[in-house]
Length: 95
Image (cartoon, rainbow, N blue to C red; front, side):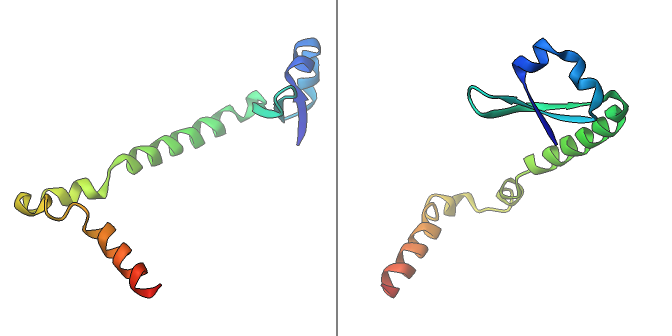
């Protein structure tokens, strides 16, 4: 994949014409700033972006929140650090 700096794009915009995909690099900070993708791939990029957004929305649904409705409120306070204590006990016994 071809890399082009930001300043090179500013000086020679026509260089983008000969590539389908170009990685845009900030050479001063040595960081990738983004990608230039030719317009003929716009529908493909939109489709992928929609799939990514759908995955993000599914990831927001926290399974712990779903289990909260079945939890006994009287036991929540006493079970606060149970897992932490269990792990600490297990590793201190082995050591």
